[in-house]
Image (cartoon, rainbow, N blue to C red; front, side):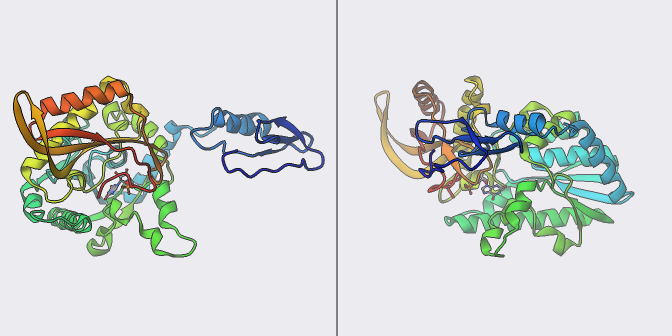
Length: 385
Ligand code: XMP
């Protein structure tokens, strides 16, 4: 198959049940002992009927019974939280992403008023996103949400910071400081609830104990508990993202949040290359908003794993009407992926690219050129910084 290696001889007692032009023994079977072998990856998304192969093997051949139901998992998780937390208080950093939203709803179902959710407005979110999420959780889900408006503070700290790692550190450390300050106001908080998922746990384990195990340490508020003396509550740590989305549905989490693309903690700061200014944030928010809305309108949003607009620091010459323009370049990125570790750029239709380019340039003063990123990961990363 794609690896160009092939097993060419059948073992004793086996017969071939599927083959291709390049690989004769694509699927083999030992029918008496019920042993099967495949020479391809049924688990990768590109394999047609891959899931069906697993389904047949598990349910028809192994006769495994399907007992795992998200509704019973939900009740088990809520009961577990009740048992662990009892009458103590829990604090949760709510970003409005799928994971922290599901954690907040779960913990709220278990302990209601003893959950304090903190939302820190860094001013680096997508257009209107922060306000929207806050209103949903406060008014619709009636959670105890505390809002901290820190956008001015973030802007001040990020003036003239060009280095990507420096940006990330400033943003992460400031977040921890703000979160600590807020939590000090509430006495007797014992737990910190986090949306750690099973892949995060796999990634943080390393057979060699090497540094690569720490690749994702910036992805959550991992630095908090040690300093603050809080115990971790991680109800989703045995779940995959798709299961968390289903769990979210059974908790009444609306589709807009449930099916949201991943969004990095440092937000738009790592999508504005180089120096960050309020004007650039505004320009990017507008362009990004147009891009995402058009993806939704064209029913492309749910086919893509992650999409965003970024603002490149260089200005180029353009022409609009009779005038010469000299403005920034907007980069669009859309990728398909399973887990963010590897990714392919999404093949957006040319008609869509034509339309989006016009819409952004006509609708967003400050941008006169739009480019589409056609690199995969590796060699690129999904984010630009
Ligand atoms: P990269 O750029 O490393 O991104 O290919 C892989 C995935 O991780 C997200 N990402 C982050 N998520 N905090 C987060 O919560 C971060 O600091 C961060 N950096 C990258 C990125 O959006 C993509 O989904």
